[in-house]
Amino acid sequence: MRVECLGDVQDRFRKGCCLGASHFTSPIITSQGCPVFRYSLLLLCIAFAHAASADDRPNIIVFYTDDHGYADLSCQGVFDDVRTPNVDRLARNGVRAVHGYSTAPQCVPSRAGLLVGKFQSKFGVESNRMPLDGFNRELTIAERLQNVGYITAQFGKWHLGPGPEITQHGFKYVYSQNSQAAFFANINTAGKDLPMGRLEPDMYHIDGCSRAASALIERHRDDPLFLYIAYRAPHVPLDAPPHYLKRFPGKMPERRRQALAMLSAVDDGVGLVMEALAKHDLTKKTLVFYIGDNGAPLKIHKLDAPGGGPGWDGSLNDPLNGEKGMLSEGGMHVPFVVSWPNQIPGGQNYAHPISALDVAATAANVAGLETPAGEFDGVNLIPFLSGQKETAPHKVLMWRWVSQSAIRQGDWKLLRGGDREYLYNLHSDLEEKNNVADKFPEVTDQLRRQLTNWSQQLSPPGLATARQSSVWNEYYDFYLEGKPAKTSARTPRQEKKTDPASTVNSWLVRSGTLTLTKDSMDIVPHGKKSPVLIRNGIQLTGPVKIEMTLKSVGEESIQLHWRNANEKTFVSENRLSIPIEKSSKWQTLSVEIPSAEHVVHVRFNLPAAPVEFRSLELSPSKGKSIRLLN
Image (cartoon, rainbow, N blue to C red):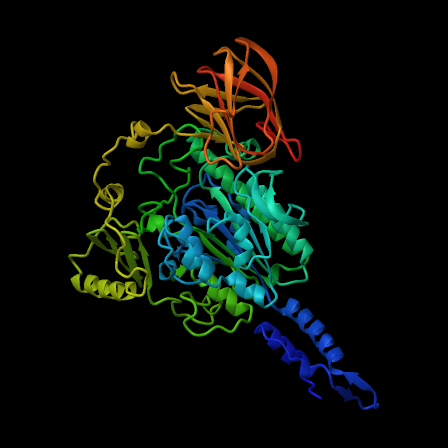
């Protein structure tokens, strides 16, 4: 009889192996002469192995923010308007990475690299526009952990394919809310199971993700957990509710106020999740990462455009140079905090460069996975952050994104953008203001050779996949050459071509500004244009009753258009005219969309005059209603 049964079975289960039937069927004779069938012992071994596994394997949580500039954690000490006490507490109890990097200056590739643990261009995910076939063939860290018994869950922004496919990438639970529109989920905010499908939000998207994650911790407190909490913040559309905005009074750009408010909601979420861990004495058993996916999009001018649509998201990259979409420091040098009490000493400002690629390698190691050498491009950070190893985790870090490529070795960084080449010493010039390529040609040549050799393993190979566009040439001119921007901050080229959208509670307004007040929603047209109020991404079973209370002194009707699930575009038949009175008094109107299908998109063409809504409700024949004002 094998007395080491427990360890043997646990080891086999961690490796994803099974015991054959021959192990189960023949009896063993105990010292008392009693037969015990091996399968009974096996069941006991499995039970003990599961208990031991739950006891000694750490939970792993990754908080991942969206277009979050380096400056915007208060523990960074850059600005005093940002307040993130819960993330600051993580940093005090662990490590604030002084030089933490994302894998790309854009959303999709950085997420692919993080979850797979390999540089994303090796499997063809170069940018947001690339197909995801390569990602779909890769094994994510969630799949690896799920295979050895971890409970895995995804929350918030996915951006790596259709929502219903998230479970195919290793996530048992999904709560993919990243706006106030319907989203795919198989749990609710109470952590209860649902059939995978579209779920209407019952709270602000950041709060919903935090609530669902904390509920899942409560539900699976005795199981090893891997939670990937990817908040869509402070990425546009800027949509912070009033109670978060009120935390940031005083004079400042409204987009800055929105970003600070959204990040405050994120910080509350971090606090809620950490409270759930502390409640069950799991804090010391949990490895936590907090990382940004790329730098903030400043659009050069940081224009405080009305509404919360495309443009600057209100976040800041100071003191770094550049922004999202650039391989300068401002585009990929991000907030990066790691905490694991009793394993990583607290209060560290860790100076060696680390990468989001290290998350998968670290998670695999602490979970006890056996992976071949070279399986990940990242490294296990724990020996370095714990002080066991004093050397740098990486001899070199390298990137490629479309027309740009970069390499960092020690304090030296070589940056290529199209035909341009820059060499910086980041120890003395973190702001990348002084190009010293001509002064140190041997360093430039050596780094270029390394970068060129590495780029041959990418798909497709090479230092770039496309010519540098005029847009990025303008950004390089402004940030790295010190040239004036070609467009004025008051009249940027984009503003001449497009009419910025205004968004609140997932309702979008074109050709107008939407403002939330205490008791109403006000829509003011841009000039003489007629505003259009839009709600997309819904699933309302027809017929749909619409009731609204409003007042306006504009035209005498509102034109309602809708699109059904089986229609790719709006059709002329799906249209109603809703008469209104020109009046400063409130009026209540009712109309019904006579559709037998699922209505997925509605559009209200409003008068070319201010309209004030006290209420607007869309009620399907089955399911929850959707309101303009929650």
